[in-house]
Image (cartoon, rainbow, N blue to C red):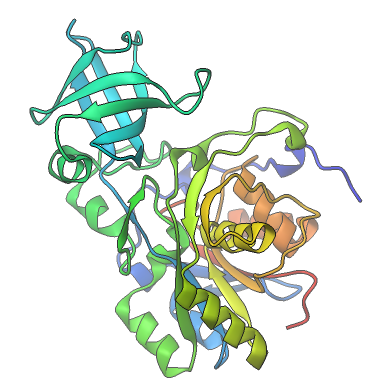
Length: 345
């Protein structure tokens, strides 16, 4: 089997193709149908017609929290926290952007009038994350004083539009700092049409972390260490998948986070926990038959994942087509539908 390096997943992307704002309507985006030998240009509203009665759509129902918080040190130096995880007892784990890291025990004054006390690094002393104790309940503080954690390639400050559109219509479990972006295209009209066609739905939860944007820095991709994210596959979803297999339908994962959740469960047998699964070409998929996804960054772990599912050469050809035909890229961009390369379904 070919040994892939980081450079294999690079491609030229004109900056103007990086979507800075969502489409006018959720389902108004484009859809690149990559399930056949040749790409087909479609609109997202055609998506229900590409599925069959009895197929199962699995969504990630995580909810994006307003995880970006601003404040200052006792010295007056400005800082920014990006909350990655809420623990117990008003404690959180966060990235800290500051010119000089304050010592453990420092009480930070945060915009909105609350405080965050630095308790140390988490979970390792050499890691990028810090543990803080907030002066009140973290979710309430973030909702009142936080900002939408837009990805680093979106250049504008968050707005009321982002608070609505950087969130899926079925989000219900708060904890993500990045949206499961393939699901952003769904609106009530599309969901109703899917139901009318006999396509079934189920949910999983994976709280997407900021590490999803972490670049791969090693040319040997096997040396890359994935970030950890918490996931859960509810009993009802496990049952829905068992029934799907019994009737011979297809499992359609909405987004790479859903893929990582389902394949983590399949590999470990654990229905909930933390995952650091890294899916690259050669990976044996056990759950996913089709994948709806957005377009990903060059050299990213997500481009490696979709290449593992649909085939490397096919995937790179689809990306060349997308660039040539001016598809919109990344979180607010267009979608594509992929089929697992070892399946004839």
